[in-house]
Image (cartoon, rainbow, N blue to C red; front, top):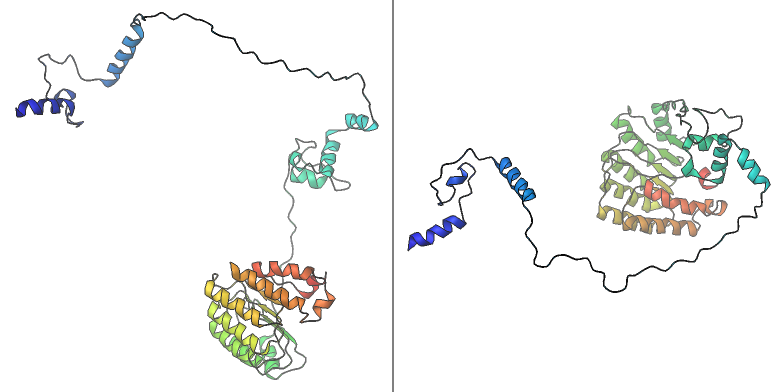
Length: 349
């Protein structure tokens, strides 16, 4: 009985093993000897050839083409006759007919058809006494423009020792100090500058961007800001100050609320984090005098800071608000998002 059950299962479910010849993959055996090695391609070709050569079997009912019912025909659309006998020629038709391809290019540029021109052709259309480059017309070759070479800005030649002595001596002549981009200045000098700010009563603007200042310098500056009541602008961009120390600086600014411009963007820890950003927004809300803030914020904190800065400008915390147009308030939005702070000259334009 078991042999009867195993035989159909062996026939229906043969072993799928490519290493075993096809004739031995099931229990079905034949006494005939193989006529040759198994060739799958030859077998398929034979089956296709046999299928093409064999005649089709006769159908029970032969096919006969019959048309039943009414054949649908679309309605003819009425033709609209356009009378082209009357042609009104204007002076512009004659001008356009006799215009060269270069003149058509200029006309397309003036009318604003930018898709028909390349950049060089567009700019050449507005240049007097122009020289056609690379052939004119719509098929003209666009050549590159020569770059304008500008002289490099000279390095910062500020005398660090002299300025440090003036800050410590509270020199009334020193109201603005710029030590930006001075990477060779030592950490000890930066700390001395930070401590000297606390006892200075004449310095109004202090910039120390891109000086490799770290959190240690920021902490010293924060302590000095708690006692300084004359500094109105502080720039510490492009340094290595963390979000924790940025909060310390803003908290110190809120003690006297004399700083109206604070730049702290482009620090090494680019992402401050949601908690730090929301704390920055709270500190700006508490300060009604700060007008310009250079920092990159994301999410709801940026929107909140924008509103608080706009509030400070609307309240008239500085005479600059009454002198300048309200376009400056619109520029504040770009200031907070990009970290770029506009100068007073830019705001008054």
